[in-house]
Length: 290
Image (cartoon, rainbow, N blue to C red; front, side, top):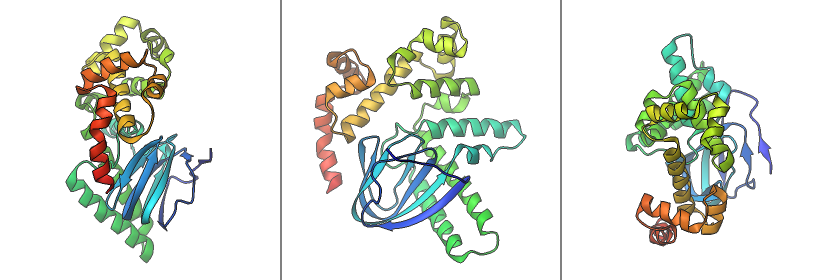
């Protein structure tokens, strides 16, 4: 599979496309995809999301994505990497803490389905900022690059706010560097059950098993086992809504014991077993596609 690289801190790309010129591919950078006009389907990690004007998607490093364009679409791509994010900090401790939180939020956005802008006023704000960026690119006036950089910073902050609004509040507010690393480790290894054992995680971070459990609950309000299960169930929910994966394929992918194990946990999580939940979502999906 082709993997793209970014050789500068950030770049802006405008394209109007009738067909997607690339098959499914990955990046080693972040990419914000804003839809100026048109509609179609965005595929991210084998999950399909309808898109239309005003939607914005966040593609994180290692996400696999492609487009199925239904109507000619105007895209604005804002690409940036970790170096760009880290370059925004200065010597003040409060700003360094903000960068840590920003990195955590951006790196852990892949479980959020569909348009990343959940806050209605922010959709208006982002539209105005995208228009401003395009105006600066066309006119190329004095200090255009510096102005665009400031607008990009603001858009990234707005995106982080929207992701943060639907993440556990306690995690967002009190996440320190060690906690960020633990959460990143869990989510990076969510498909590897052996690496998610408490003793393995504790050994990886140099903690005693009992202390890791207390430390994790203090910062998140839930046990590490609850966090892992809830995160997996959120991934199951996304797959049921936006993919054609069979239940046994989801079981194998996410390391559940068997289908009955997943059925029991998911019913406790959503009040329905996975098959019933998928059937319940189908009318909504058809209505949105029309």
